[in-house]
Length: 331
Image (cartoon, rainbow, N blue to C red):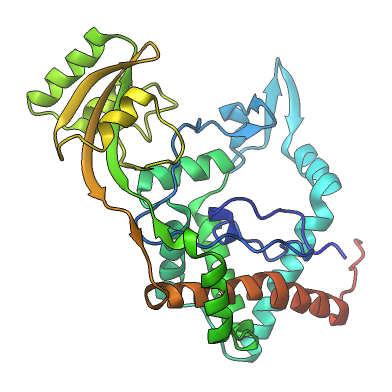
């Protein structure tokens, strides 16, 4: 039985883009959540919304208060778009709505609600899990995925209700936690890492000019944003994390990051025809976490995995099978 249409993709998507109709098919166990201080890297992507490989025109992204669009003088009505959307996606969207309603009904019967504080806490948790700790990184992600903050809040609310309605059906033993830690012990080793900011420019003259601006009192972030292209501006100058042995940086940059003094601008550094200015703000030594330090994190992760991949799909299937659903005929 197909319970949903949207896949679970990447670290963040395990919860932030959780849908009440996540596919019920068996998924492989996700790798352990990274210990605190190893936030995911969201650099290197364009914030343009993408469908396939074709950028979506800004005029085609706005529906509120719009009755149609003129294409070289020929009209496409909003009602035509709605009809096409229902034809292509209607059953899946409708089933999403039905499942959300069933969850609401079950929560209401048991007197369960999701407070604003609980929703805020869940959103913060999902952002930490996805490495979207800055507002710029979150806005970048939402634009790229064509989501809104309102949508994210609704999904966080649904997730809180799901945990309350079904949480008592999930149990994780100490033995399971220990076995998981033993299997993934290396994943709970934090590599040596640095938090840094970077500006990349095409010429040494541009890079030296940028450095002079910073030396004269302007902030690194502001100079980075002023010099960035429109697609790069939202993340320009934002703090990034790099782990030794992680995704490779240019050799000349890698060689400097772990030896650069804190809070000082380094560069210009020439590499691959570009010039880099760096500012390292934090360094962390490599560290092996013990079971005692991560057992609560592992237990939470295993509970989440069991809930999403076991209890929730079975509950959805049972609720859909037992619900009284009738079609109301149009007059």
